[in-house]
Image (cartoon, rainbow, N blue to C red; front, side, top):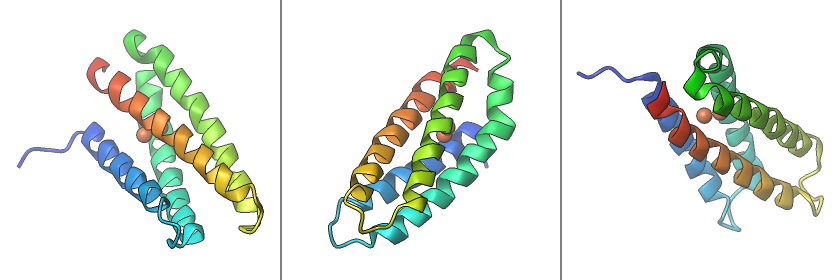
Length: 120
Ligand SMILES: [Fe+2]
Ligand SMILES: [Fe+2]
């Protein structure tokens, strides 16, 4: 059986996050619950990347700049996640913030998949 590379594992986690965001498109979905699952996914995923992946890729010239950029994106993703945690669901900005989070995360994971996989 082929061994999963760290990239295969990370891509599976990316797909799971994409799927959860996709479910938020339904107006009837429980968005609070979906956000809480997205938050858990993102927290574990970003923590793993920051502890195990980014420190290695940051030291290699071909991946250095994109890794630093990705790391900064994590910082802003966490800010939006925390904003959502601290904001009542009824606030008219909550849904807009969730959409912004989705756009940030989708951009971030696309970049990671394109730029980091084949250059390490
Ligand atoms: Fe990431
Ligand atoms: Fe990632």
